[in-house]
Amino acid sequence: MLTEVGVWASTVDSAADDPPNIILIMFDDLGYGDLGYQGSQHASTPHIDKMAKSSLVFSRFYAAAPVCSPTRGSALTGRHPFRYGIFFANVGHLPQDELNLARSLRQRGYRTGHFGKWHLGTLTTEVHDANRGRPGQTQHFAPPWLRDFDVCFSTESKVPTYNPTVRPRDFSNHPGNLQHWWDPEIDPGNVTHYGTRYWNEDGNEVTEDLDGPNAQLIMNRSLAFIRDAVEREKRFFAVIWFHEPHWPVVAGSDDREPFAELDEFGQHYYGCIKACDDQVGRLRHELRELGVAENTMIWLTSDNGPEGSDKMPGSAQHLRGRKRDLYDGGIRVPGLLEWPKRIAEQRTTDMPAVTSDYLPTIAELLGIELPADRPLDGVSLVPLIDGTMAQRPQPIAFQSRGRIALIDNRYKLIHYGRSGENFAQPPWQWQLFDMVEDPGEQDDLAADHPQIVQDMAKLLEQWNGSVRACLGRNAD
Image (cartoon, rainbow, N blue to C red; front, top):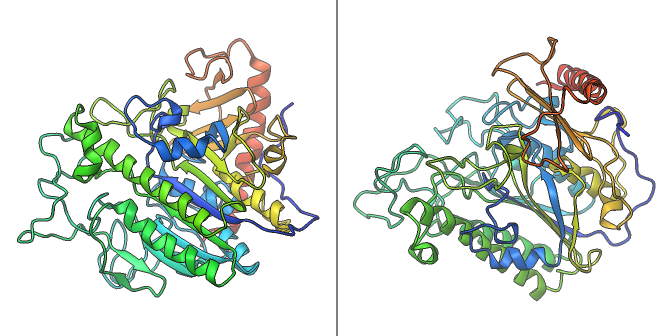
């Protein structure tokens, strides 16, 4: 049965006696088929594959958007980012008054840290930095240290995935240009800054210890933060957002070597995924060494589907579409939850879940009462974790650049209008897919099931009205 989507808030009655540590790992542009446990033909990810063997594995896990910034907002707020003005990559910012996980957990005594790509606002008003940071530009200044993160090692947006602040030699600033590839070794006589900087929690640029695989540099800071929290006997919330495999993908020779049979582009692409996998293994080992692995939740996913095309590596497997699409190739991504205390062995669920589910799930676990005047788009997955949920209680709605979709436990309704088309102006031309029988979205059933189309379209109208009302109240 379909139910109303994203128009109410959740409340929680009971508090957790022994709250978990929480780690959110997110890759950037990693496709549904880009990990070993997902059946990749090329990827070497033994550590993540081992993690999957002890995790709740989501076969239908979704990024809330087909591009990075909106999905990252959803992971911290439990809400579709259109509710607060993050409509696309490099658009808007995370508002100060928007409830986010870091604030909620900090208020519960957690140490909070952000490491890697932020992409929810600019990080400086003093210098030219990344995509939008400019001297005197304050409109979208929203760094993680002003959004309740105690410790930061953060960039506004993308960086090379090896020697991340250095412009690679023979660099071509377009992902489809293969005439030259990138040499990860630094030429001391020809060093040019890439243009995106790392910043710490004091708002100062980080300039030391920035050589080598970017994933390793991120994990170095993440593990230092975790060790410090354990020494302080504090629970910790670590957001570890890798840049890999978003271009420019650059891998060191050791990480490229296992992929020598591929072209140079493929070697760098899968080499930087391998570098991340090594760091996930390092993280899991350190948690065991510190004695905190048992009660630490590790969520692992991607912010959207792959760039995958004739010129770009990255695989969505059998799924239709790619990054920027609302077909599943653009939004269905790997999804894992490892938590030994509550998940004793591997389980796989076909129930749809989404990055917006993080906040309501964690809120229920910790007994956090959520504001009644703040509609959520995610649901608590605690019953799923405990094995008592088989069906999603409300659908998942998506919207991006004039395109809109709704996914329930079986069907997907999608309107694929022209870029810039206003969904608020009917009539709409719908496609309907049975995602259980036709996950590749090849057989449009809209003409065969008009009542299902009508019912789902009505829910989308309600949801869209709720989103527009929130945006009117919360835009800053």
